[in-house]
Image 1: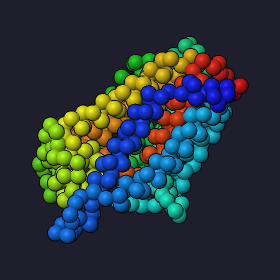
Image 2: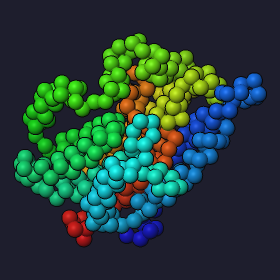
Image 3: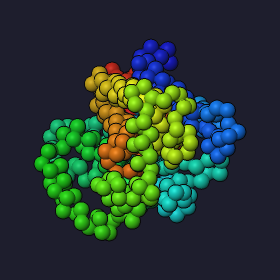
Length: 382
């Protein structure tokens, strides 16, 4: 397939929605760039600045777009052949975090490459989706009903899951688990297996609580159950998030005119809690429109999966649709107090490079699968 033919098959609706969300991200990060104003309010004539967030994020977006187009317009056979290699590479990076990882905010999740930090847990999701897609794509319906054929993919999931839990990063670990369960369900795993797994998980809950969770993680869960238990401590962030979002009302306080966010009452407004900043400034309407954009992107990816005739492309589209949906669902539920606080960024919106790069690369792979939707493929990429 020539490059011209690939451009003709390119999925423009998904790309346009992606660009809109990226533009909204820059707008909100510009609004968040007012640290000096928060400290010297009497010398500040306006809120909003390109630094330190918006200008930096623009550079990251350029790099992410390059990765997106490489993933989108390369030969799909390349990704079939390299699926397991990419998974292994991401897994090695996760292992390196245990030994030479950079620690920040009480967790060891990053590799310090000198000029920037990279978070391998974001990239293991790309390798995992590709590896699972390759593994399941060429199994027939009879093979997919046999329990023994799920041991290998279960191991593919379990190893990175445990490594991410050890960092600790329960938000990303939960994402990996949900994506994998959705993957197993869609390929044809029997429902009774999920029921048995849920029962075993419930029975293991006391052990997980007493042995597997850190103190701050228990505090977050207790704060979720009792929101008013520690408003000056573990409950401060989520309480300020609710105040910020709720105070925006229907139409918001106006762009760059928030009080909780602009006056530094809302921690992490540029990263995990950027949705509450958007809600404060643009109101319920702004938050609802962003959710509509996200839902539309997920729906398009699901439609791409249905339109793709080869099984590998179908599973790639579905896997990254799951990844994208889990991202925004967990983040929005978290910042609105509908689930315990976990470290999951808002897709394409939050400040940072690893999440943005992995998401854009994943969206590029979705485009690649859609471009090659009518191509017949083999397990060896032939």
